[in-house]
Length: 456
Image 1 (tube, rainbow, N blue to C red):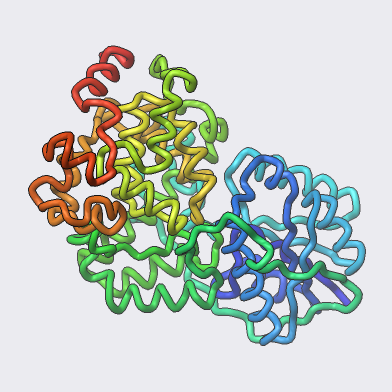
Image 2 (cartoon, rainbow, N blue to C red):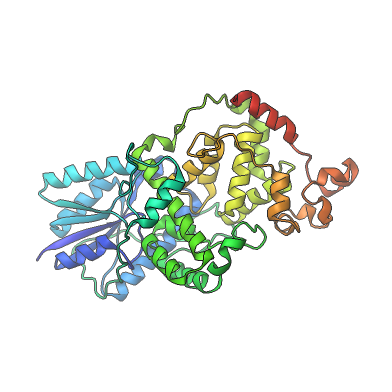
C-alpha cells in the first residue's frame, strides 16, 4: 500500500488544494497533517487572536475530512522532526506541501527536503496554493522581482491562472498514526471581544455573500470607513481557508468595476509575496534604506503608548486603533492612516507599529503586514516615499459624517459633525468635559520633524 502525507500550513481548506489532490491521486492512503511549529511560536507569532482563529480552522478542517472518511492529524514541535515521525509511522513514500516565501519557511522547506531524502522519501512543493500567481512566475527583464506595483499588475493580469480544483469526495487515512487533541478557543485568554470566526465553511459563506451583496459597490465604497464595505476575507486568505486562485476566478465571473478593484487587491497580496520571496530580509530590514533617524523609543514612549491605546487626540487614528483592539482587525484605510501617523507624524520606527499590529491582527500576515508598513513608512516599494497622510483631511474625506469615529470613540458621540474630527476646536473646557485627550503633537510640527529628519 502506497501512502502519502499532505502537510497543511497556511492552506487550511479542502477546496482548490493542489497538494491534497496530488497526494490523493498518487497513493492508496493519505495522512492530512498539521504541525504546530514551535519555532513560529518562539519567534513571537503565536498571538492569541490568531491562535483562536487557527483553532476554528483546524476543527473545521478536521470536520470536513471526517465527512469524507478521513481525519486531521495534529502534532506539535519542530516541524521537520514531526513530519519525519509521521512519515515513519505511516510508512509514507512522499510528502506534499505548499510553497511559502518567508525566510523561515524557505529554510524549513530545505531542512525538510534533506531529512526526507535521507529516508528515501520525496518532497513535492506546490505553487499557487497561497497565491494566485506564484512568486517568480512573472519578472521584469532586469531583475528577479518587480519593485513597483503597476508594471507587476499588468503582467499579473495577463498571466494564465490554473483552474480551481474541487474538494475531494473521499480521504482514506491509514491506521496507526496518532494525533494530539484539536485546540479550542476556551483555553485562550486576551482575545479581542469582536474576533471573527474561522474555518473554511465560514470563509466560503462570507465569500458567497460578498460576491452576491458587496463586490458590485466595492470600487466606490472600499474606502468608506463607516460603511464597512470591504470583504473582510483577509483572515481567511491568511490562514488559507479560501484559495486566492478561486477568488480571482469567481470575482472575474461576477464582473464589473467592483470585482476588478477587488482583484487588484489580490494582486497587491501576490506583489508583496514576490518581493519577500526575492528579499526575505525585508521582513525586518528596510527594503530601501533612506537614512532614517527614527526617534529613540525612550523619547517617543509616551506617544507610542497613546497611539497603541487610541488616545492620540486625533479621532480617526484613535477610532482605527480601538477597532483593532476590539476586533483583531482594522479597515484598510485605517491601517494606512495609523501607519502614516506613527511612522511619519510621530516619526517612530515602522517596526514598532508592525509588531503591535502582529500582536493583535487576526490576519497578521508577515508578508503583507511588514511590507505594507514599509510602504507607508517610505522604506518600501512606494514610489512616493515622502507622502504623509493628514488624518484630519483623510477623516473628512472617508468619514464625512463622523459615524466611524463616533462608533469607536464614544467620548465624541455627541460632538457636532463640524468638529468631530477636530475636537480641539471645542476649547479646553468643553474638550475636558468629554474626557478626550489633546493632540499628542501638532500636525505641522510632526511634518516639519519628518522633513528635517528624512531630508530631501
